[in-house]
Length: 171
Image 1 (cartoon, helix red, strand yellow):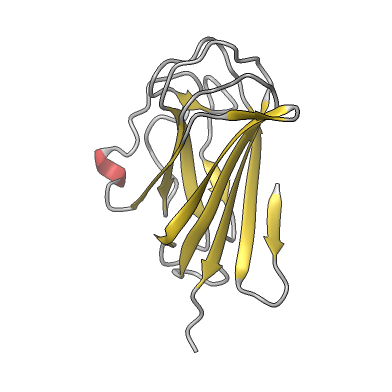
Image 2 (cartoon, one colour; image 1 turned 60 degrees about the vertical axis):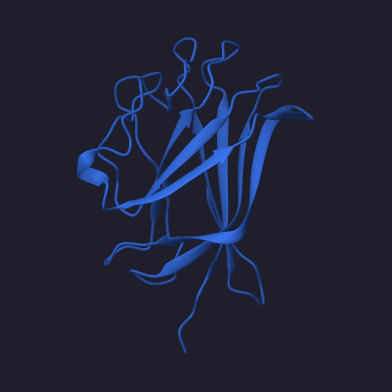
């Protein structure tokens, strides 16, 4: 989707949207992705202004373009592309042993609520959560999983994740 820089501040909002495969009912700890056979991570590209920087996560939002979804969702965050499960509707194994050093933590969204024509959940991080980009990279990578099962999914429903961060700028 994109990146918004807020004028006069070092706040940035990075968003990623996917059409979920939603191949069948989701159970606890299933991955939510765009494909059942070639799923990809959520790439929060250029979340930092320079390679290897730390950004501070202030707010996280997830929306799905349908109503009456109430699952708890978890976003696992990494500073490299994760190597665990990425395919939709498959049991999550993130973070795995290969990625444990690059794992930055997780955001657990409370049960979603109806807001107009979407289901949404958000987290205000207080204190902010540090996310360290890898040396040679300005991105953070994610895997979205279910925390609870749900059955009213529809193939192609759009899921949007927004991360609002502040970068600490060394002078």
